Length: 337
Image (cartoon, rainbow, N blue to C red; front, side):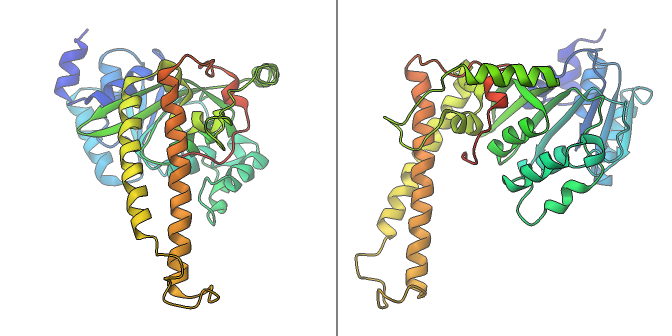
């Protein structure tokens, strides 16, 4: 068997791609959605970690590059390529693991919850849409019949944005986070997660377990911050591991948030200095003041979340245990970054 290092070097596997590939369960059939160059399926097949893969992309250009790389590596008999919008072209029993990496979180959620025929739970999709994914006004997208096939029991996800929404979406479609990692590469931070499908019995047992356990109460130190909100924003497993890369990102975000808060404080007009009568609530100056105040409050809440998360690193609270745990079945709110 060809060494993993030789294969990784040949197809230019970055640290981010290597960590994602490592999350795929050995022996599973892979569907890589938004495959780009097709590096992960090639790497996993060449290292004999998976028997087969389907590389899918909505754009012809990336798919053509993937075809070229697959042919160069002699894997055309094991890796299929398909032009597909999300999971639309994936059959009902062709994959065990779905990998989606490098796209926005809202788009990722739309792909995951789309298709009432395959997911079989229209109510869940409506609830998901009402909670911010997909974006307001795009709820019709959840009725497209291109959701998760029944054979898929594992998700490996690396969203570029709206991370909290993705973690909530995972729960809504009946999966639970079992592992997370985070990589810093070229000055950018990439959180990634692995989720597994829950059986009906498993969901009931987990929910009963949650009711008998107490969540951390931050009310005394961090008003308005809930443990599940922090877990959605930053990752239950990353926090449980006290992941060093997450800590660096939190510290960086705290500095940035404090700097913006100071700028907003300087931009706030002096009392009565609106340029218009205080009674004129519709004046441009008053509108600007209201927007600045709203943004200031959002950033204050973000700072509270970050500060609460960093406190996990400084103490030894009974944080949410990770894996198939109570976090995955609690009905978390809309909070998060």
